[in-house]
Image (cartoon, rainbow, N blue to C red; front, top):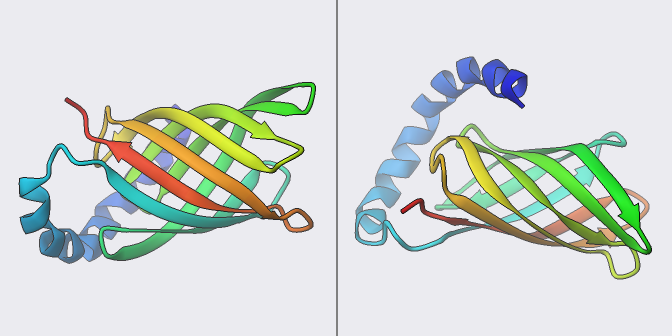
Amino acid sequence: MATTIQRRRGRRAIAATAIAPLLALAGAGMAQADSAPLTWTFDKCAVSSTTWEGTATGLGATVPLRTELTGGWESAHILHVTFDWEVGDLYLARLEGTLNQQTGAVVMNGTVAEGDHAGSRVHEEGQLYDADRGCFAGTITVLPAT
């Protein structure tokens, strides 16, 4: 994950300039709700056997989303998975959880490793909606670090 994080630092500096006005608009409301969870919706589809790409929408903006499967194992009809989540140039998070192969439901938890909200807990819930293309939709909730 360190290599992934280091690769993206240069892109973050450039993208921060573009995203700053959006965050400034949201800033007034966020100042009063610093402890409130931030919820993003997402939609992503497989682009390879270990990578999904799509979008995440939150804080009044839609940003690119990329997730990479970094580990996993199977028990019965459950896949236990570890993913690195890159939400635009805002943050990177490592999440671990399960994919129910019968229902298509996914639940993962983890921590923001770098970027906005570093150290915050993350909870993801998703649902497979297109098995042929490997597409999932759901929510990502970031619980601000205390």
